[in-house]
Length: 362
Image 1 (tube, rainbow, N blue to C red):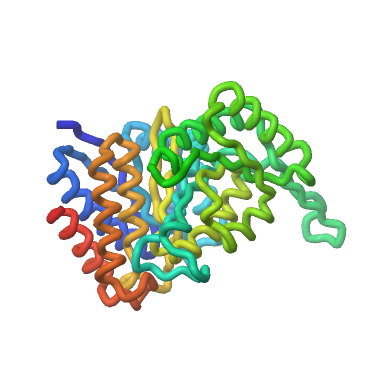
Image 2 (cartoon, rainbow, N blue to C red):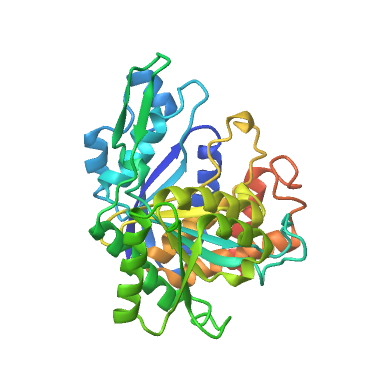
């Protein structure tokens, strides 16, 4: 029986509440599907920062390297200035652990309302693969004459061919295994590159050349499409069924995945993975810490449960991961009144209980 070593970072705000439900469901999955796990909690977050001045120390990064995966609740504290925790914990973990892929399924579950007219689960069903270590997020740039009328701020988008190639390779291989044809939902597997080649003529020229060179040489069976990012936003609203798998840079990926989250029913269902295929990956609900709901037991835990399911899939527990997703779909279709905090018809822990019970009975 395999034992997975899991680092749990509940984090801030409602993070501990939703993480507890994800762990609850993982316990049931382990019993039902015959695997073991050992979890260790880490208190990195706003409370620790205010107490000690530490975000994620180098020693913490080395501790995290010893685990098979990381389950994260949320980072963000109302008493800590924006950027300190995000850069000091989230970005540091992604960069130091080289989690160069952000994987974001955009799937509408049954029973969940979407703001898109006449669209349902069959139409809203695609994946965004976001390069996770380059672009403006590298911090290249600076400020001159700060506080004066002539202040200049520069923050540069930076990519090298190595970063682009490894993100594209992951995207092509993911499409090969999980595209719509592979799932029996379409006639072909399609990978779409999202960029802005008509304006960002250096960065996305690099991406587009690498995309077609790799696709033509190594993955000729996969259809290749290109979309400008602004057009992508329009089509995500008008015709989401056009998409299969999308791949893009860090900044564009950050923006379009939030748009995708709203179309799939809101942040309460949006889960993501920060992936290092050769190392330690980190999984999280993408909705943030929602501090105004802290301690009320009203926050939706399904995104955290889905993130845990993604973690199991990445760890090789494919049957367990699918069963977790199926249990969530049952709960959204048959139990919950709404996905919104305080309107679910159940408390946070009761929603976790519903998913756990359905998984146990499957």
